[in-house]
Amino acid sequence: MDILRVLVTDDELGMRLGVVRTLRGFTVRVPDVEEVIGFEVEEAENGEAALEIIRRSPPQILFLDHKMPGISGLEVLEATRDLQSEMLTIMITAYASIETAVQATKSGAYDFLAKPFTPDELRNTIRKAATRLALAKQARKLAEEKRQVRFQFIRVLGHELKAPLNAVEGYLRMLQEGQLGEKLSAYTEAVDRSLVRIEGMRKLVADLLDVTHIESGQRQRSLESVDVVQIAGRVLETFAPDAAARKIDIVLNAPGPVRLTADRGEIEMILNNLISNAVKYNRDGGRVDVQLAHQSERVTISVSDTGIGLATEEAARLFGEFVRIRNDKTRNILGSGLGLSIVKKLASLYGGDATVVSEAGAGSTFTVTLNDQPTAASASPARTLPGDSSPRADCENPAVA
Image (cartoon, rainbow, N blue to C red; front, side, top):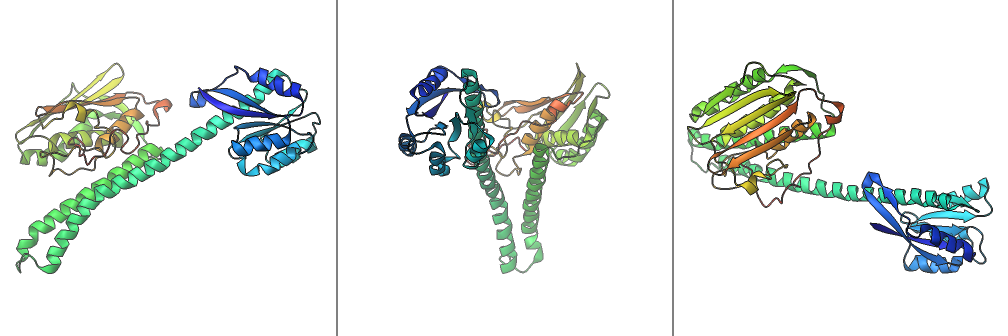
């Protein structure tokens, strides 16, 4: 439970004690931030005493009598103007009038409570103040998290682009300085490797745009009845040459058409990422099985491979952004580190999920479940912060396209 400090400043002892009694044991629940707030009350008998306490340690909430001997409540308010972003002031007075309220508000008062007031009126007033403070605290927390996310995102993105840019620069300098001799054919490999690196950067940019569009909700969606089997067949044709070059068999298993109300492009993205991974991280002469099924108003897409697989602790991190596992088997396999994050986000658009079962050296099975009828409630995917699923630690995920 969060405790807010309350300072009640009034020259009437009875008024101060009444506030103390009313707030003793009183709590406010703020459901928007799932927080319960209690109160610790201090007293000041005049404006001078209040200023001394405030300058020493400002309270979060200040109850301030308008008319007091010596320094008035408005003078205290003016003297503490620089603290108004951290301290909410509630003016209390027996001389309630529009003019007084306007003057107090202009001087920075948050609220106005006219004497005599009931315990319920006091509780309602402090409930509003406590809720505002809790929401403001949450807003500051989210702003700081956003700043940290932006920093982490830029750091990781810079890391991902640095290696391919350095490689391309190195190859270009070889060409510029003629390091491989006078025959143009000697430079073919350097050009080919540069093109591969550039394609990897283009894939990273494309994936970043996909993630941004999905998370912002700005991606234009066209929901219609689609046949997932037909879409999968076209995706398999795309990867057939790469699979054939490594003698990898790709098998599509489906009991006839599997229809789903969906955006065709989103289903293509899911299948592209899953099948691309299954081919890239497979062994030569291996196998990829794509299983499609429709049951109980849910469509299941399952892609299994006979590839390098993952340890349990590695598999648990796969769906985060930029999460990749570096090892000897994946060193030469390029990827953006965003493919499975995209799959997870797209699955959430359909009220579904994406999971993996993997065994090191034996292969992996990725399963995506999608509701047949997307609803408004599932229109916004759960946000995953870049790198929040695990520390970066120079990891490369062998299952991320």
